[in-house]
Image 1 (cartoon, rainbow, N blue to C red):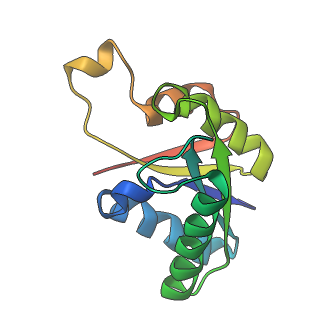
Image 2: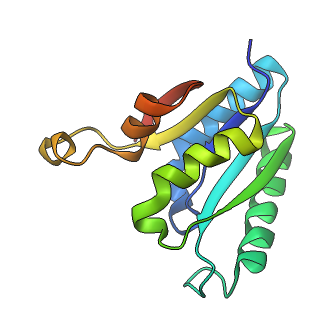
Length: 138
């Protein structure tokens, strides 16, 4: 049914993504398809990496460890945004096309009042993406 799963990852908060990452790995195993772990970074130095190349190495190491942990095929894809805080939705939308994903599995919080003013990243992707989007509540 699915050929490639995209799982957005915030390397600074991986512990909050456990349910979504496990769900993505379970689906990848079930369908026998790869997961592409996507991380968004800035071209400027940040707290996780000094440059996009260093960030890409860390994301690749994360994908490799997830592949071994779940016995699945995993890849990594680094998306660049000048301001990841405000451009994350656009960067993830581009990554869907760049990775060829036909399913996105991502974590999100339980909706609250502020989401009626500023929708969550998962909500925006589900609204705009041409592929299926599964939002896993934390």
